[in-house]
Length: 459
Image (cartoon, rainbow, N blue to C red; front, side, top):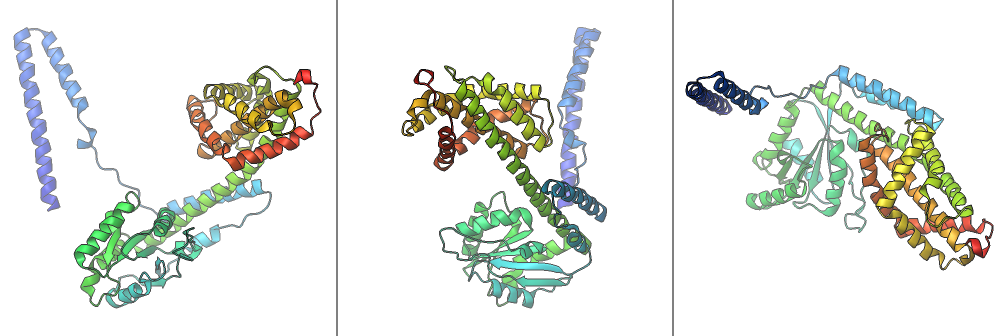
């Protein structure tokens, strides 16, 4: 069927090209004979060239294929992982556990492992028993009926855990009772990026009803799971035909690659998980150091503004301190630039703060908080000082988030400035949450209590 369709498609494309060529030839001859000059020929040639350029390259191009995962590729990724471990160890200041011996052991020949998981009472045990009766795969398999993922399916928190051993399974059968609960959806959203999963809708209903349930589940998982990976099955099947769809899909999965390829895929997924963990740990180490720099700088800025109050917040006056903070944060995230470059970036970010109205917002908000502080005698200088400190904090946290999302993008590029203009309102929204703002204000009151009282005329 597919061969005849391909042949017909090629004939259709060839006919279209032939028709187009003949039409352009007729136009060419008509223009030459009518004009009797080289001008008509030139125009016709340009038309032909433009038409050829407009044709999709896909007609002649071959379909790009995903490179086959080989042992050499996996070994290369393991070597890259070694570098990440070394980098994290250097920043931790102490040795980290080396994951490579465990990962390399995964390359040794072993049986494949299938895990059957789900909430209590969805039919996991029945499914395992049915598979044992009706399925004889060509590879030796270790079929695991794992413990439940959910501590309590009915809790408002919808709590669940992903056991580390579960992620070592080569294929996971995620069983649900016909319909998908919010807890199960959350669990699948965490599980799917890290493992190969088939979603099993255990439904003893009539085939038509079971198919409707399957389609409803698939709609909830749109973009997460392929249609062929969501199957309606009766886990209490009395004969093989009732499990035909699942058995066929399992056979397809097994035959999709060799045993070695299955093992390489498992190790490759484990490398991805380990890389993600190492990246998160490395970022957290750097984030903590950056936060310390932000906390220190914001009160330096506050002190500068408090002792030299101006009619309106002078961003230029704080550029030196903010520039130094940018240099320090840049160094933490391995992005180096001079103090002068950092000052220019700080001024650029300050201009963004003004354009977004964040300076006015912070001043008004903090002025309102100070009304009940009992420190009214320093209200003028205090408002400006705390606003400067608060905006310094917002800028610093924005830079930390920028480095998390774009670890290799220089802050001096136009693309970086555009991204910062997007990030600033987002970070400010997070910082405006009552708990965060209250925490800052608590620190601010402590800082203010340590400052000398200024004369009323200077306030």
